[in-house]
Image (cartoon, rainbow, N blue to C red; front, side, top):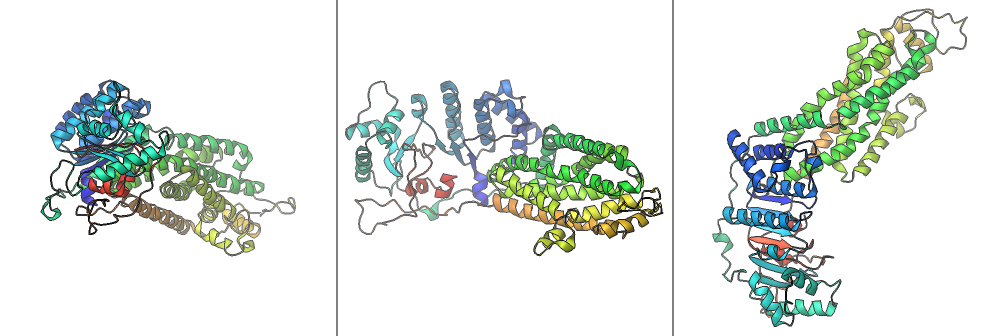
Length: 582
């Protein structure tokens, strides 16, 4: 699996790039992560690949502003930087005009020959110029071969079975029309497939007509050296630091949202800034809203982090980086961001408008940060576990609502039934509410209250001491206590955050290490009607026919239209069926 990652690269149909990096930065970071050269050599190599793929005009343009064709060429540039042994390209000419498609394919052919690469592509209706660049071709329909051999032999073969190439016709379009069961007679397509089944050359020989070498005598590829994890982490740290600064939504955007939302609540609860005992409950609620709204905004992070993880997953499967480097770099960068969030959410709204005592600054800040970190890690977990970001966002909202409902401030703990009491213990709000109110109330000098003059107040004690106010408040609001449990509650909340982080790490490792198994030796030949009884009668599991009918394949350059291969066609290329579908 490690060798496969090291020596292959997959360019998917949907180009995925970091929106807030320029094309040049994307290639530079890719070259550094692949360790293709030293610092000076990396710059030269990046400039060379930019020039070869016609990216000079957009080299310093952010990827979010690139056209479809430019993004496709950038994907190919990243792939070529790696210099893989086996290159998978899913429709590399999609979104390109005829001239750009031809130039891209010519560059791929040149690199394939110079670097002795195996390239497998899927292409919708290659132009005549692109088709003529093939070395050999395989045409597939209904999961079966319609032809396989030298590209120059395809036209004479179809002419020999009654399907000559019309004048001034693209051979690729002609062949695809013949084997496309959606628009051609199913009987005619079956006749073409059956005819090839009877006439095709012996599959014990390669497509070049040479006998297959003994698998035990093949040298194959070597594992090669290992990249430096510390260097990889350093590169990832730099890249994601710039992404955090440039991304206007995931972090900077939330800073602004937290500030505005908490400012609104601090103004709505304007009277809660008074240290009179009739504002005790309002003070509790304003400190709750200061964290409730920001934690709910974590739903935005689920969507953004899901998109981010898909890019990381693609890079990991292409051997660019390891899951460990991403996890370490992102964790180190995100923790300080949580404190920045706290300053925006609490600085002016809490400590200026609501006049929260400065002596409680450290406790209030750490309690708020620990809770927001729980939901940030939960957002990361749902972003990784659920491929569909909408499902992940819904699960995040379920978690937030459960935290709010079973936090002990809406329904007292004693009134909850099992298993609902479990949510009280495993979610962070009860610990936050209990300790945030202790930190604020105990640091506040209250105006004494005379019970006889205020018989309807829930809390009214003839004392200015916060401890006395907390004792009175706890009798009507059991979640509040006059016992100092601030640091214990911070530790508990951090443990909850660590639990979500561990689950996220496990999910990331599972996703990045989930690869197809590849046999070390060559598979047996495909069964044929003309083979002897001793020939194998079945090879692997059957593959359902693709909805797309036509396909192309070459050994040094492989072109395929469709999403499925006949089992033998994929294995004869030395690639597993799972990898073909991927």
